Length: 117
Image 1 (cartoon, rainbow, N blue to C red):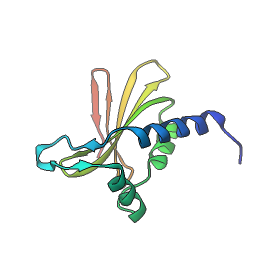
Image 2: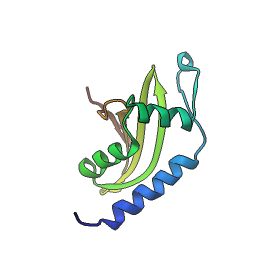
Image 3: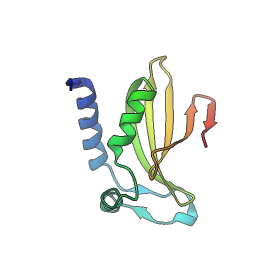
């Protein structure tokens, strides 16, 4: 196994940022619940959702560029990881993953949006 310092530092930075940011909130009035870090942690520990590191592995493998932001949301009752990247071509790309399955469900890129199902 080789040591990839860039990947390690990126994970460390976003792990810290994810741990220090405010509570994630639901975007939908039907989901009028606040998802605090303890609830997210419990969901990961119980296997209800995948850990952020799994999502970041997929992003690093399939979307070359730099991760510049991560959010956790609930949309229509579905737990979602939103990962914002600065792609190699210099554009901002937003990737939305189903938190339970780590399936990519939507890609938004400056004026373009693709839904994956």
